[in-house]
Image 1 (cartoon, rainbow, N blue to C red):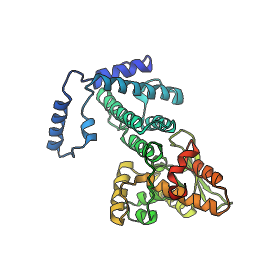
Image 2: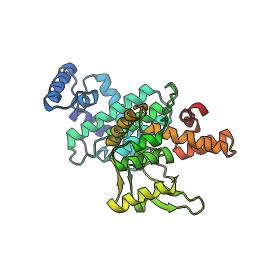
Image 3: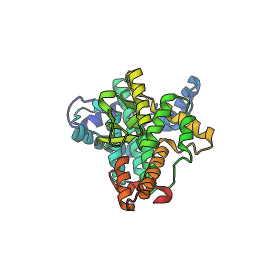
Image 4: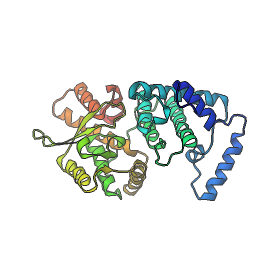
Length: 322
């Protein structure tokens, strides 16, 4: 793989050197991987198979290369990244979110997510990945959830939990319970609150409102914004940071815990972390309109607090209020 040159050249060298299996049987490769997974006792899923297979058709290779180059050029422009080996999960997430904000079709976003999964596979094969820097799965999963929530070619579905507080209380891990509250009481995305530090994120209690101020830096569009949460929740995060040096949780483990809590409480276990943002949006909108804000002004405020680039996206979060 080229360590210099254009983004296109670097991506072409990577795909050819790491995962190009054109001329070989995809079926045979998948059967071999399935046998390996069963031998190892690993669940046989599409994702697990994709992590161990390459690219077998010219059209797929062409599409994948196009997506990699788009992402690479985006990272070069937005983050001054000139070597694709320096691309990380948050960069991939930012690029995917920019495409979602462009209101592409769900199918297109799905294909882009698949391409970026293979980008991580190729980097790991070519370079190695001892510290997990090329594991993009969480960022890609979050993009899939965001696309399902906001893209207009998806039928509107109210993914809010009936009782988010009860769901949060049934999470097994204490830090997950706090994280869930940050989502349904503050409107944050999972990636925005999965790692918070004192100096970087915690801004203190606002004496005027009595609410805690948290600076969100790992946002999907790269625009830093401030989130206000009840003081008790702010102090819970603060205590965790003082005890452990950081407020942090694994996003995959959180999703699994949330799914189990959903089953346990009789909720829709597939609502996912985004369902908690639905709860925030609906509660906040109802609060604002009750306080006398016009419908449009209330939607604008909620949109800004959710970190949406277009106010129209927020309509999908509002359920019966839209």
